Image (cartoon, rainbow, N blue to C red; front, side, top):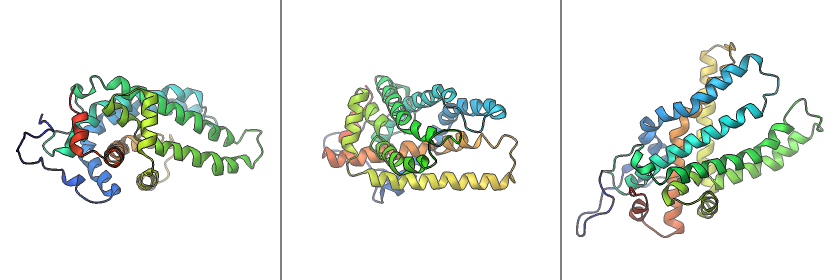
Length: 275
């Protein structure tokens, strides 16, 4: 493994082409392609339990899907993502400073970072659950709430939910690189993403459009096959797009920290050095 710190008097390390110029979206897409082969196998493992649960519940699923059976699954996915962030993000940050760095999930990098990243992932999943659960209940067609409530929730609750998600998008990366506790990671993520929410939203919209396009294509190719309502499609697409989810975190954390902390890529790489 190459060290991100240059020898005195040596030539500066080459910066990866993916991080040379271009907007946030272009760099997120490029970084995502770079890390995808390393992330996909673990993304498949993370999303596999969701697929199994959906397949088992599908035959007797009621008109409105139950919430509680999915709670353990929700936190299991978060823990898996936190573990991947701890093993992957340090090498990505070192690669941003030195093209010779090998980008991969490295067990040595997760040492001393896994607990922090997984704790941050659980806190983020809990915040997501607390904010999104009202949307599930007001959308229940069997609910006794007035019919106008879903519309009110969409106008009031959903924008708040999206805004908080955008401000916490780098939560796991902050925890894994800076090795801080979950609450400190929340405060740090909130501070670093000040002024970056709209750029995160723009990249997120593009990724959602990719998800929708893939879903439509599969539905058309399947010719409306509804044997299991294609329940494998949602976890499958989530696994396929997970590398770009981590790429978004990496690019936003790097750029936001360079701006907010007035540091260089090399300084961030030093923080990401193996413990």
